[in-house]
Picture (cartoon, one colour):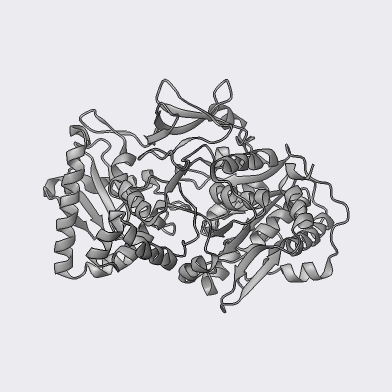
Length: 559
């Protein structure tokens, strides 16, 4: 049956909507490339023929390294159609991690697409990749690849004649976790688990071929893979891409997505960019909810490119209630979604009209959830992984005897089944006074401050917890001026006092440290999905904590 696999869904839309546009790719020169379902299927069949011609054993691993693009998805589908297994790699990975994944997965071929690095940096990166793995250059990839290009292979290959459609239970992809707690793990999914999550989307969001989405969060991550790629194949809607970070706003306004998935960091950036342009009277009008604010609301949404958005999703991290309230004033009800690679990014979701502040929603369609005696969330669903690649022992350790996955998250469930995440089991630490601290709920209270990029609560083995914040680049430049810094300190001190008033005595933050250096993917302190690597940050600054306590200051500037 066609609909039981992703390739089957592609062939379905090729038959039913051959001339409808599926993928829209912006180019650096401002032009657009569009691909209909028929054109996508044609290229998939030709590349699949080439992959079969290479003679790899069935179900071989083939990797994709690159930023989101139309041909990322087309290559992924070609790998599936040829009977192989795709291994997506984050384009932000350092060469050592990329090599580890290529080696661990035993990948036999590497598709390379758009990358952020170029010039000498790209040459050095390319040299560091395994020379023995053949490479194919996707359109718009950096120059210098020693291998055929996508265009060359498409021009000389005929469409595959025999279509041995993969079975729904066959291994389809290995998604490597971002490695926030150590070595990346290969999470195995098949067509069945990938498509299972889409049934829940229909119940929650009523998606259809008339929808539009913008793909810009990494396709190597399970969330983008599920909500954008897999859902687009399931429902047949159009996917737009962004050319680069500098054109993101323009690309978003072009796409005018009807369903938009983002992370709290970007929702905050939207808020900061707009709020600083509004007059206080306009802000008050917007937040009033009065009918005469409709024109202003529409203008703000149009400026953002969200005027047609009917479903606004947020995930991967907690989002501040202040930010949620601001978007609600614009007419967008922010819907939290929660999941992980192991259940193809789909566990819980907030549904329209059922949102509760601080909660990530109720179980998605077909998901069972419970809290263990130790307070850990355990879930079970048809979207659950097949296991960790080459790690049966670890797979066994992460599962209960009755088949529930141990998420590693602490949580509570209300009477309507809505879930509140209270922290990570491994993140909870104990102070020198023997008190346990869950850092994430405290960090969440500082998410809505413009100019703050990342926060981290520390305090393991120390008298009290304290907060470290890393600033956005523009904010660092602004705060070089002494008067601006004084004003910033006053506002931050006021925020600290307000937060501490709501915390338990043992949770109260002793001080705030403003870090001068950035926490980034490049220096290893953030994962490719922009989550903090807590243990590495703690290791980097733990030796300074005693000195900071001795300063007896509320706000401390470090470097």
